[in-house]
Length: 257
Image 1 (cartoon, rainbow, N blue to C red):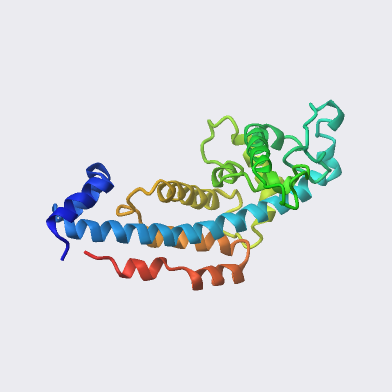
Image 2 (tube, rainbow, N blue to C red):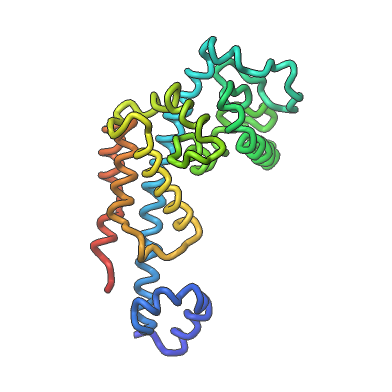
């Protein structure tokens, strides 16, 4: 049994505002609230594993599709000539398949801000490498930039149902010409909107998990299903592997209340 003084110290350490949701759910029973808080941390950790796999699978699949699309002669005619682009120190010059630094239209307008952010972060990561690092002096590559993109970047490369969105037409065109090839087993609809909705829900969950927010009101079973369905559109074996390693359902069954 936790002593009263220890309970008070725990509450102060975690802060009453952070614990408020759990205290409400447990009718102000501090011991139960702490158990629920710990369970929430375990669920968030389990979801982090699943979401990480989902993000990597989606990122690599979209990267492959956009490399192929960007390298096509029809798209290369829409790329700004490399010679006219401002020089980038310690950055490998883009080849035809490089959809980040040498993006064809309409992808170039979608990638402008994410590209600049990725370049800055890749340079910072490069500067932090120790002298013994095998790539200490290596130029920044496409893969270095790709690794800097967040889940949200890929969410915004998928179609949107918001017809008033300024990138609605570009995202629709990109889906039709390129991005749908990243999801060869996707059959729910032709316009990719159901997939985009799933990915959007997972992006929101990723943000909640990353900020250690309560997941008590999240439909965890549905979000777990969303993740597995997204992975399955790329690779069924990968989906099965992720489902087999996931701890989400086990932790859900251990709900303490």
